[in-house]
Image 1 (cartoon, rainbow, N blue to C red):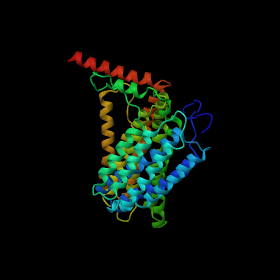
Image 2 (image 1 turned 90 degrees about the vertical axis):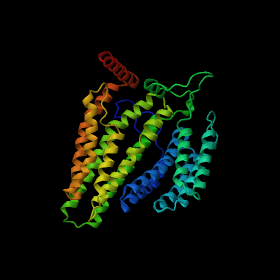
Image 3 (image 1 turned 120 degrees about the vertical axis):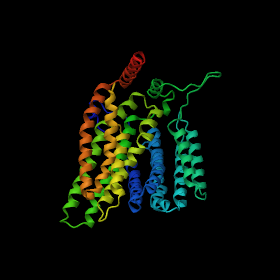
Image 4 (image 1 turned 135 degrees about the horizontal axis):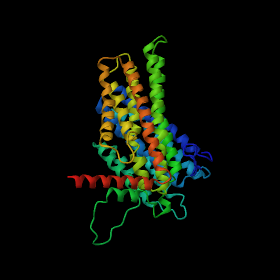
Length: 427
């Protein structure tokens, strides 16, 4: 990370991503590739749903190490590096077993996931750091390790995994609970109150996350997933003749699409998320909302797009090829909220956003009248158009946000309350 952040125009701050973290990501290059390959070998929606569940399991495993290093990791300490390096072994084993999970044989994968969580449990307990008590996190990972171990011999594997991941989410980034006095009624907080709590620094500074490091870690993971799309397009060249014009058109279209998706995320969404997390003082609940959960579906959408483009380049593309591509693109656009209009949007702005997302997914119907490579070209053109349209919207959001997202969000809330009051008065 440099001394000056060119994107935001202000001084860069926060810890650097460690070299050992980049090495750790190499394992997940292979792992996510296996998930995408699983959808290519059996292009049906049931397989895509299973791939999402498998990806979510790997996703939370990666997040465990990202948050660990964010809060207490240091490349200068050998113990921190050794825990991450040790984690590459069971993660690598799990990556090799991904296809067996699709085939209904998850035992070795589950055992590997249990081993990963034992390493995370030990890493959060030893070596002890002054003022940093993460024993609850350590015990939580121990429980997850037991659950994954038991799931290797149980018939309802996915249910056990879902429960393990949900309880991990509760202790890893939602560790600070708001107390309730005796006799106090339990009321659902308003949206403004929830934003206030999310933008409030944690009472325990040890629970805070480093916004610059976390933003960079997730940005690198998104690059990793975009790389799967680039690899998909490039490897298709090994199986097609050099004079195949349709292939070369889809090759260019695939790379253009990858560039557009990169632009959509890194030119707007990534900057907004980091700025909000930085203002909150590293609030772990906000990090959970923006990154851990907020990035899950857009991240998986990139794999869905990669699988769809891969299938489109086959000699006889299945019907699911176009649908995987357009559904993935739609999920990515919705998940990164690139069409969200800041401030007080008109009624037609929301309608236009819904229409744009619906039109994106419906591009798959073009496969009935156009060859698969031509559909990829059309979808790439649409992605570029979406990028151009979203660029102005998101830059206006950044300009209005300035250095005080609280005032920006408060202004939106006040405008909405006034609009609601006007509608009530008018009726």
